[in-house]
Image (spheres, rainbow, N blue to C red):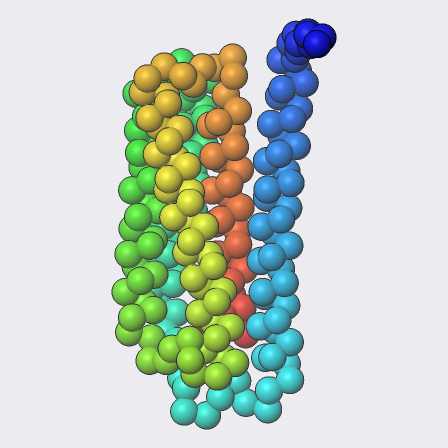
Length: 195
């Protein structure tokens, strides 16, 4: 019986790891963008094909609370930028405060969204309109929850010293994710509440 020797894996260069990180983030955001674009396209397809939209008996939702949510998500995205700027300048308190603000604003968005959906006057079971409306809003809300968890994990890692200015990818990825979430909600807000 022969023995097998295990070969040591060559260590990866930091540049290769950084490229893989960015590639993974790009694929993740692209997949989210594709699903989001598909859902918006389905909604618009049904909107264009319907003789009346929203269907008779269903009122268009009031845009006041969702407009507030637009501002909340823009503030959340800006607070991630503040966190990124803080890590570059080695201002740890600013990093922690920016990530905390992002998480809190994400929770505020989720609570406002839940309140809005609970009083909207129709449900996911109210035909194509209700189904597409709720699918889009819940799909986005779930991604906000992921963003809250993501910012919380990065905050916990930063608090324990695992985030450094020399390797700021976790914070930069958080920034990009939250900007993506904010832009997606602005598009959804315009489509769902005004078009």
